[in-house]
Amino acid sequence: MEELLKRSEKLTMVGELAAGVAHEIRNPLTTLRGFLQMQRQMKTVNVEHTDLMLSELDRINLIVGEFLILAKPQAFRMRDRDVRTVFNEVLSLLESEAHLHNVIFRKSFANEPCIVTCEDNQLKQVFINVLKNAIEAMPRGGRVHIHIAAKQGHVVITITDEGEGIPEEVLEKIGQPFVTSKENGTGLGMMISQRIIHGHNGTLDIQSQRNVGTTVTITLPALKDERADVILEA
Ligand code: ADP
Ligand code: MG
Image 1 (cartoon, rainbow, N blue to C red):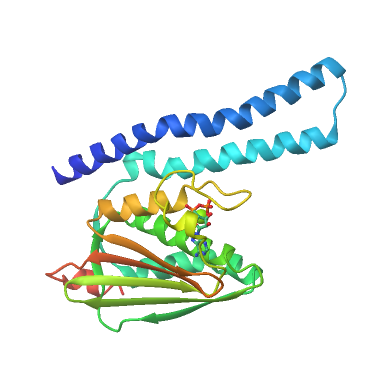
Image 2 (image 1 turned 60 degrees about the horizontal axis):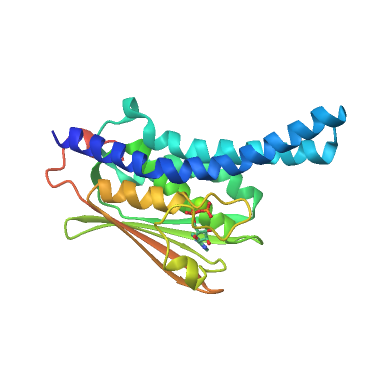
């Protein structure tokens, strides 16, 4: 039942967003069509125009890609998992990307189990979105501190970067679709992350100071009757 509810919630959310997505995709499509038509008339291929068309195609791909995660119903399965393990899986995925940008991940994980009931692919998506933003906020590199602890019936995850911070006008609008300060941003990552965490009965808060850094705090309800098979996983 709960799962059904979650799924219908998810579908509503996808529906709500469809209008916005259609708009975001129509712009690059219009550009693409214009260039193609021009090439047809001129009967020549212009490299500059082709590059623009490719970057418009990449943009469409990026936007559609972000929505695949939400719209994939068969991937939806709630499980009991240790957040430390899930996070480690994400870190190994992002290690080379971080290295490339001179970013170092510093972990401080609790010694005791931090188990939550979650759709772990969705949770991973949230961690990836937040870590990517942290990497992108530090163009010259830096450290990202990841803290995971279990306290008072909750698992608390904080991710802190030493980046540029979030502009005031962006911070107050975070969670709304297509809010971005980046040239090639989609402005979907934080919105999707917030929705996923709320879908897990958790909270996602952002604190940021210009040129000092940003901390994202995610709180999830901890599983009370910790089962042995799950604990062994960590
Ligand atoms: P995108 O990364 O595609 O722009 P997001 O939804 O992930 O979209 O983030 C929205 C905006 O929030 C970003 O464009 C950026 O301005 C701001 N932001 C998010 N996380 C951080 C961070 N760690 N440091 C600085 N700015 C951030
Ligand atoms: Mg992002």
